[in-house]
Structure formats: structure tokens, C-alpha cells
Length: 184
Image 1: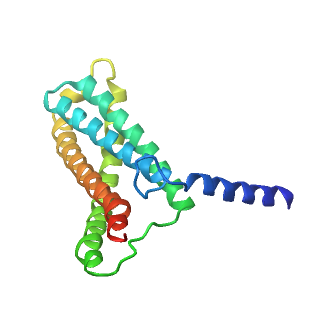
Image 2: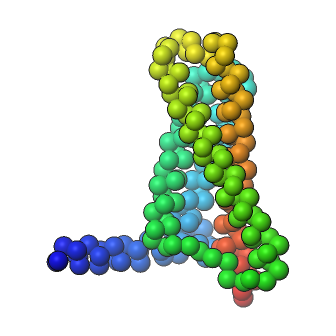
């Protein structure tokens, strides 16, 4: 019984520490601010990776997109921890701003994020599987049926993720910047 009580108290004290105000000067929590910074980092990495892919620079594209996947996984784990510690930041106003702006942005964000996540997992697994076969020569990039499929699905996945990031940043802005200024 004692370890359970200690663990519960530790969780509560950690939750109080983690839910403090963030470092960006908004009303966002520390985890919200870290998530936002990671979101910007992922967007930058994905754009660089897309550029390498368009220029047919296989290794830089491969490693850049692998890095974006790793940073995204860190973001996703942090997001899940954030939601378990601070369940859901909600838009307090249910007026016109809520129905005309916040709700549509959250719905689009949720739908596009789901599609981007599913496509991203598919493309990442496909790239890793195919990359392991001819890692040194990158022979999979020359295979006739692989490149077009990877390119089509990868580009759709990347643009879905970028739209998801833009709407995620908009949700952050609506929750922690706009709502705070309207509430004053």
C-alpha cells in the first residue's frame, strides 16, 4: 500500500511541476510549449527532406526523413504524456469564435492528423524495409515499382503532416494566445 501512495503522490507532484506555465510567454503549459517547438522542428525537417527527395538525393532524403520520424515519435510520446497529465485544454468560450473558428480548425486537425499518422507509418515502414535490402547501394530507389509508389504516398503523407502541423499550431494559438487575449 505504501508504494502505491508514494507513487500516486509522486505522480501528483510531477503533474504539478509539469503543468506549470511554459517558456514561450503564453498561457500554455511547459509541455504545450515543448510540443509547439517540436512541431516547428518537424516541419523544418520534413521540408528539408522533401527538398532532398525532389532533387533525388537518396541518402540525405533517407536520413532527414528518418530524423523527422524520430522527432515525431518524441513529439507523439510527449503529446500523450501531456494529455494524460493535463487532460484537455478547452476553449472556454462557446460563442461565435468557438463555432466559427475553433471547432472547424480542431476537426480538420484531427482528421488530417489521423490520415498523416497512418500514411506516415506506412511510408516509414516501407522505406525502412526497402532500405534494409540494399542499404549501401540504395538499390531500392532504382526499382521501377517502388519509387513512384513511395513518391506518391510519401508526398501525400508529408503534405498531410504539414497541414496537420499548421492546424496544430493554429489550435495552440487559439487556446493559449487568442483565448487569453479575448478573456482579458
